[in-house]
Length: 437
Image: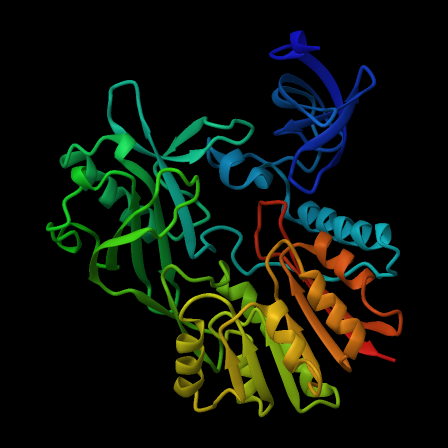
């Protein structure tokens, strides 16, 4: 079958996968195609086969979906592959995906309402760029090319980010050009933004410090909105941008974001929701739900810097937080003080370790785990203790459905809502609230 690579085929697309590929069948084989929508017939070039599934890239759309829109970026498949899909249809497909995940796990779930994002572009507060050298030998910013292990798409920025973020990364790129920094000495450039403060922090990860000046004053040559620049050595043996050594810091390291009646501080390298405006909607629903039930105490696992638990403390609940991220306790407790409240307890350790000791006696278990979902030890402890209420916010409804299916049968779903945190992408946030019968 190796001869099928680079072959042009014609395929009718039936559905969209959770990763944004149009899926159809050709010659008895499942084919997933970038840049194709359900109801379309496309010609595609095959480029990969994985676990019996062929992957291709659409070359021509022969029959066009009524839901197709024009992408506004050439690199859209790298950052937001559903730019070609009308937002109303995008939300409907995300609803269908969520319901199918739960149905597959045997969990009865009504079609969840999906709350649209107030901003469909310029909503992200974090982006990561890699680097690329063009045919003229000039250093360019880039995104990884979707459907390619090492391919790059040169970019000047991204419409998902406020333009000031794009101006900042272009400014630092221009500085690197003037320094004649070779591409092989660079790893990635991360940019963070505060919508509240309208300020930017840049973090440059390098693999060879001898080519980068740590003495230069970068801020003087960047837009006024850039509040801080930081330089890190990242071990080249790791594909991820690791904080192996902090080489240089210039000015600010923290950002603040307004979440309504609460304001939170977080470090540039720490986790924070990428769409703060949409997150406020989910936060308000969580606060409203917990305020209606018979509860006084909340255990917040995966608490981060307290973006969920500090507002609950403001509402008068006794809150215990758990987060493994270094310095999480420092930031979370500072955020509590900033808002005139305090944690009952905060533990800087793994959630699956802490929950063994501190779940019993808690009224509400609040969960906002990573995409991988809950650790088996947490599910085991839930089955042992059965807290009266569980509030589970997830960036991956597929693992969320598996986790809820593994919970005791005497829990009833009493509230569910989805949020389009990530417009023009296949990703969606989902809230499920459960009550012990």
